[in-house]
Image (cartoon, rainbow, N blue to C red; front, side, top):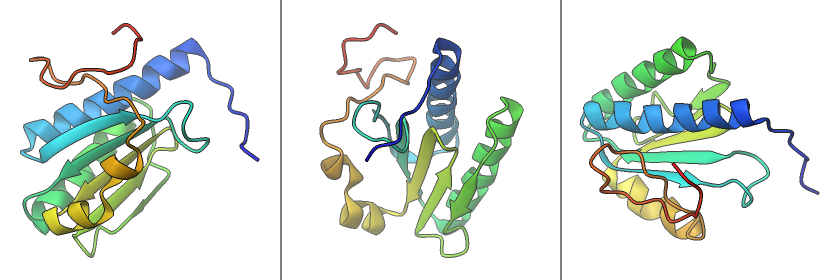
Length: 138
């Protein structure tokens, strides 16, 4: 049984701001193949996934630290994180946004984009290269 989640418009805006901000931060720190998936209506657990590929374990750990700081700055505290020591897959749970930082081989292996293939991709880049496939206005 899925848990009912109460969401206000302001909470939805803050959640989207967190997801898009994390994607932009990852892009600015040279993470690759960054996507934001809108899981609202598909997952009772979270609203967005931010998925990116790191070029090294050091870069991924540094980026995870910066993402945590960014969340704190906008009053979205990190709830749990795992994988920082391993360096091949770091998961950061902000409750409504879950961040997955992979190395290339782990990203191919787990292929979250395929698993969550029904989820619309969210526009997050100013150049518009990633289009939102949902009908919601931006």
